[in-house]
Length: 56
Figure 1 (cartoon, one colour):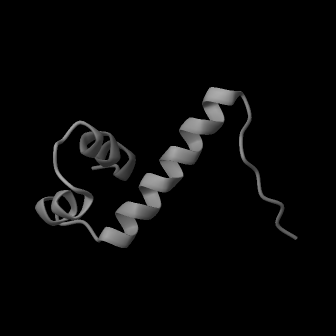
Figure 2 (cartoon, rainbow, N blue to C red):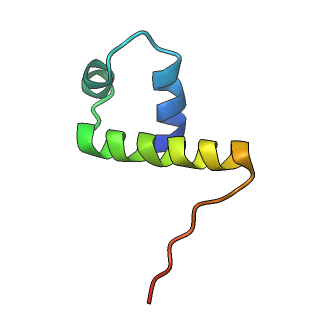
């Protein structure tokens, strides 16, 4: 399952993040990072801007 879909499933559950990770055999650090990425993406879509990073 896609981790972004998993994040959406978490949002509709009544579980804590740690409970959700345990129930779905997910690594909490990976889940937290993907959830944060999804939040940043969602915020950027709402205000019309996309966050970009310069790599040299």
